[in-house]
Length: 353
Ligand SMILES: Cc1cc2nc3c(=O)[nH]c(=O)nc-3n(C[C@H](O)[C@H](O)[C@H](O)COP(=O)(O)OP(=O)(O)OC[C@H]3O[C@@H](n4cnc5c(N)ncnc54)[C@H](O)[C@@H]3O)c2cc1C
Image (cartoon, rainbow, N blue to C red; front, side, top):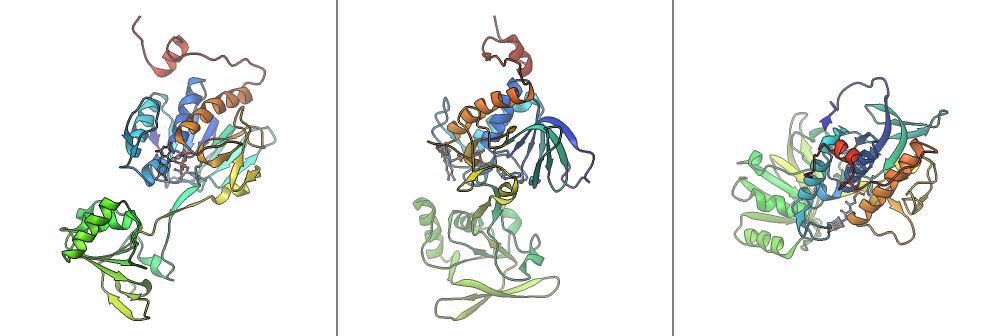
């Protein structure tokens, strides 16, 4: 596996057998199943890392329903899936949203991101619920301070040592950040619309304990305005339910208002959708356009369940569908990883006799 430079200029199209759009758990497993059939894929994701919902929404939380793994966290599942495909040396293209898919006269597909173009024989869309985008503050001009004093993602509490921090939000991410900053930041103020928080009970209790000790201050209301010079955000205005305004002077503002998945350009790709999901058959998980397949949370068919294990099944059958499309007229035989020398070669393993 290697990463492309995200700021690289657009170059000649990359020609490939398969493009997988979305590096969530199902996209990663799709790469593996394609690999078993000798099909090399390129994997593209709008995010800077693999993992989809497992990493973005529940990296540290337990999953109990993956076959053969009684317990693992979202991040551990993704680490294992990445380890499983390491041998395939799949090129990953991160920080790139696929914006265009178009059928070519030669039957292949043009695929475009903002930085690269591809020509592929098949496409597997494993785009989950769409590309994740943080919910942003709707204050005109605040985006000028993004990445300087305004951050929509929280990590590494230590970088905020001795700072006055304002967190905006009342769900898990906001409460986790407030708790993590306790004892590190100079002051922590959490701004939330109402006095009700949405997170696991144990987290709410830790948060409320720190509020009771005056380590975290809660300011009810909405961020309604800000004052700033060209270089620096100097103050925030919060308006409470009585219409009273409160000025806060943060060094850093962390709006952690949740992540909103955006289906984005998928709706313009000319494939049939039903309730914003890609309609597929249940034999190959192929869309209304031959050569474009869809697996995981993005697809729909009678009886669809949005579960990782169902996505793995879909990816397995879609790989056979891709092989039939790439090698028309050729029989694609099922082989067992236990006994097939060809698969051992692909996987780089030498089983004991
Ligand atoms: C809190 C929570 C707990 C869960 N627990 C479980 C559980 O215990 N067991 C279980 O089976 N399931 C669970 N799920 C559901 C499970 O996470 C999903 O079924 C699974 O993530 C779907 O995988 P996916 O690969 O289809 O999509 P995703 O994980 O959503 O990944 C899709 C990827 O596609 C990328 N993408 C989208 N559009 C584009 C584009 N245009 N260009 C480039 N990239 C794009 C996105 O950035 C994303 O990385 C849970 C979900 C949540 C929210």
